[in-house]
Length: 382
Image 1 (spheres, rainbow, N blue to C red):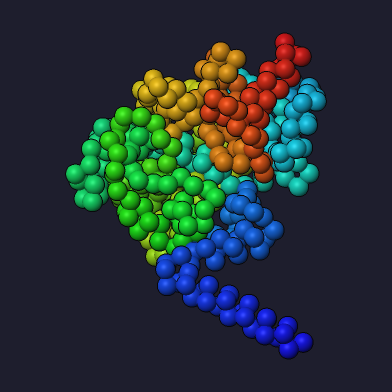
Image 2 (image 1 turned 45 degrees about the horizontal axis):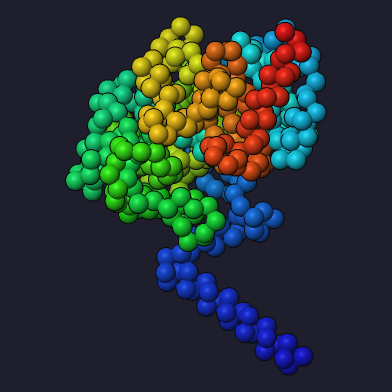
């Protein structure tokens, strides 16, 4: 018993010492990560984690419900789709054909109004806000230097377009496993602006693609500074209300006084509303006959910026699967808005996990499976 008490005291002492060291070394955000992730029974960020963070509301306007296709839910999912949806924990799967809901399926505890985290699909939305800020005259062009907004970067040649196309040259470490990485700090710490402005440009910008979440966070800060208004408010009036979103959305913020939104991730909404960005870009920036995003910006966003890096444009992932021109909003746990303009087709998948990456390809296996399944289903009614 005496040995047990001594061991218990030692363990408690080590825990207290560990916590003190985290505070002394400015890594106390790790405690929040432990509380949000491990103490809720998870091992990483998860689709319902927005409830553990402070959020700002993006108000909907007058909703514009998706019309239902005449063939709505008349085709059963393929056996392969059913299997992968069960295996990876899909919570929402939509096929939108000719701007109408053709197929829609949800997991037992989720439905059309369920709100889940977008993760990096928010990068595409932030890129859209860049295009809107250029249209509104707040930002001159894709070529405007970021030093015009933050003097720290005056000597850098990085432009806002470099941020949107993942070609900034920032010394950001895109690590999702280490709790000490800047990516983890950005997600769990309480002063996001300080984290981002501690970054430096250490590589030549505008030369090649390198995926860094810090690029999109800095881009969001620039858009907010240029417009002079909270970014959630700008999103609300620029897209959320004009596109007829049917629900309010939530955008995670850090919990310091500046209330900075996490533009590299973390807009919580539903599958139907996320799909509207696919429709907007498919229709070259037009919505109900109004040009709410410049067509030239849209066209540039959904083709590769760099010939050597054909998988990315400006805020969108790209694929030529099935010899189609496909652009994609993508989140880390297999959140997808997959748009295929030539077939007037949008596929939305939200869920708990994604599959494994394929050798030499920029997407995990499930991405290709979702597209194949959708075309197989559509073929049954053609």
